[in-house]
Image 1 (cartoon, one colour):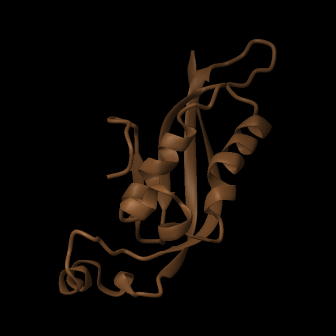
Image 2 (cartoon, rainbow, N blue to C red; image 1 turned 90 degrees about the horizontal axis):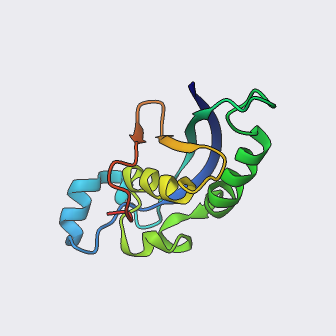
Length: 141
């Protein structure tokens, strides 16, 4: 029997949507106010879904404290209250769109040892959320 477990976490971070491949006018047109040279921030909510068989002894698919510690170490500590463009190496070369942040979080969590990572869902605002299922695991685009 395979069960899914979804756990929610939160972090606050800032970013600037700006592509080195586009000129100033095009960046302004494409990203609008999100291209502000000083950046802007969000209170992100990330959902992490793992799956696996239920352990006979514990009745769980994963120990919640182990999952929490793993997510904290791999995502929350590095991302929380950071300027993603400069403080996360992957975003020095790639635009830190929420799509790319979602993929990066998936890549950081995919080696959780106790269960299989199924998906990462990242909510940027009450209107915007993105979900990545790891179809083509690689680096951010």
